[in-house]
Length: 476
Ligand code: NAD
Image 1 (tube, rainbow, N blue to C red):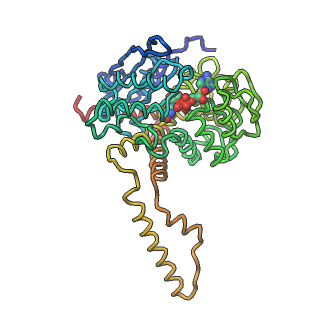
Image 2: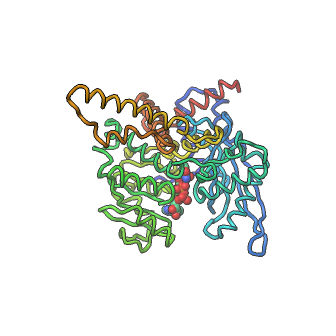
Image 3: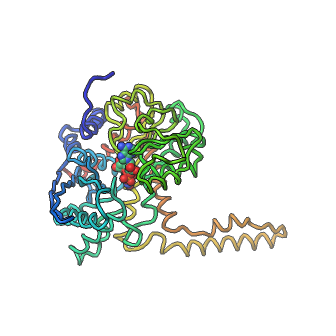
């Protein structure tokens, strides 16, 4: 058993950065410039609630401004602190570079348990927080663009966008000040599912490469693979739902904050989600056997483990007992640096967070572009595309009838071929392309360099290389 103490989340990210950067030949000054967090703003503000003033503490950290705007979610949780937002901001820098989203890295958080407040109270708190950030340009379409994270979603993003608009009434691009908004408030189709969808695309890409499957001591495809997911929130729910309904994977374990459910035959993810929404936990759900000690299920036998809740859940204490040969980090920082080392020594393949959950920021990028261009994706081309396809179908029919061997095209083919892509299809296509290209960039380094033995270091090398080139080009 390793007796060294567990590092903090930020230290863990730093240690992983150090391990990777040692393999690059960067000038020491540049290495340090990329490593450090540029600025973290702490705000304490009061809101009159329930007859008295309550004080809240929030943060917005900017890790790197090699590209602007900087981008990163806003988290609502009692665990939020400076260390955490700085670690998450750093991960955003590397994530954006890896998936070629033209942003620097940032992250924000409010120290609050959102479940303790009514909706109208959360709106007042969110608007006040947004006001404090916007007046310092820490929310701004060209400088700093937040998004949802743990404890926040479309509703909070709509309040933030509206607050920014009220403060900047003549800014024609005000909608682009935040992403993850509802569709009717400047959002984009496919943003809610994006991070979970990205996890699915990442796994699909992994299973396209026999060499990578073999590295995890696995065989076959996603079909029939046993999956355990921790956290059935936005990311975990969508990932589990898509894997079970579209890829044939079996969800054998679901770990939530109040315990876990296990069922070797697999669970209906929608039914578990409905139970959680109704009762705020998994206890009492008939889909599986209830286990009070939720985290112990991380150690159960399975093929794929998807931590999709918190950071640091796989660490020095339990990493040695984790049996999954493949872990995909849907959450940010679920494996500590110490846990990572133990797992690597065992041969576990880890698809790292900066890649695995990049679907969110990728579709956020599409939303930001949509807001700046003030037009829905596909609006100009869709009918024209359909008309051209129809032309071809009619020509094929004509040739076929004139040839004397009339063969009819199948109805299924015709309806699929004639259907022009709408916004959701375009977003999914852009996301899939992004996840596939980024994976290929990582695996090239993973398999191409003798001194690289894991995907995390490969991901860092790709990202740090891109950030370094960007700083060099700017002439820092
Ligand atoms: P969420 O708030 O929608 O869901 C989190 C889920 O985890 C909830 O169901 C919650 O009950 C559960 N949970 C909380 N504490 C737990 C515990 N101790 N054990 C097990 N489950 C617990 O959050 P989310 O948006 O799905 O984010 C989850 C993770 O994904 C975070 O690390 C976040 O940074 C990361 N992420 C989210 C996005 C996004 O688009 N939302 C994008 C990239 C990364």
